[in-house]
Image (cartoon, rainbow, N blue to C red; front, side, top):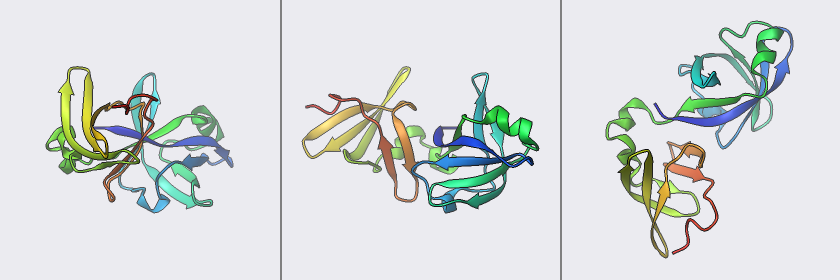
Length: 161
């Protein structure tokens, strides 16, 4: 399972456990109600299923999660990041090698995967040559499976050849 942040709980909404969530780099229509979202508690991802999602503009929604039934529950998770598993099981058969052919937005095309212990990296072909980019969850902003695009926050100087 590879979790990527898709949004954040901005505030509670109402007294029935409703949450105002802001979403980043994802279309609300792409959020599956059959798949759980995850919120970390004590360093572990806890799954929640979305019971209802009512869009509020392009990147916000009022969301009702299972097990969040009142204002107290909602306030407990206010401010928390929300994650989803965006490498589906069938796409993960080859591990991160399945990312070969994807595009790193603004950088180039993934040509390979380097499985360094505790530091997996992507080989990416740019217009200036090949670079190696660490594949760390803190650098990944979003992944669009339909378009096969990874948006990353790459530290300055990492792409210098």
